Length: 294
Picture 1 (cartoon, helix red, strand yellow):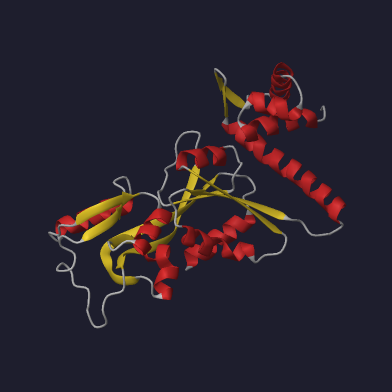
Picture 2 (picture 1 turned 180 degrees about the vertical axis):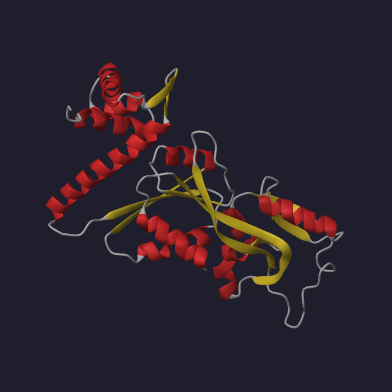
């Protein structure tokens, strides 16, 4: 049996990770036609296609995803070996690549990832983007996990593993009220000025149903999808804001904002999404398990 051509495997690895033949050819400093020919040679050697080709688009086949897992292990170990040779340390630096949807609470994200920040020999790479963008990078194994406040379902060619890792109650928060003056529902809610999540938010859908069920009318002055902006408006406006308590944990602790009440039955759920891999990141698995156990 002939030996595997590791140069062909390297070329495949770069194309799979970049998801683009032209960019991979530029990075590897070979012509696009030569790169394409060597990937076909690897496919012929392995006896199965690695990519589905639709025009200029390359999508990994199921077998290609498996081969990418092996290539990740092979070249990842090679990179660790070079780091070891340069650094003279007998420990391996483990890289954790995390994608977080842009609308996710930064406080929640920091709380979740804090255990990794305290670990020696761990390198954390954090990327932000839309869920579709991050899932594309996860499918190409450029990310180890995607953190989202929306679940995803497994599809053909996209065997996601989606696990709920936390649930946060949604609250009404605002400026501190005079001492002894309690917040009353619905008296202090009807026709009050509100800042709420945008219409596409799951929190907003739940909150609208709660208002309808309790015959509550509110005056919406702003609709915001981004949690960071919701936090600023909660802090700097006189309106009541609907959001998970974790978003404004610092302002509540400092007394700049007050938690008026939890909204019964309204929650924000948080999910960790991973792709099927032969050797999943042990650090990611530990992080998810620790959060779920809470």
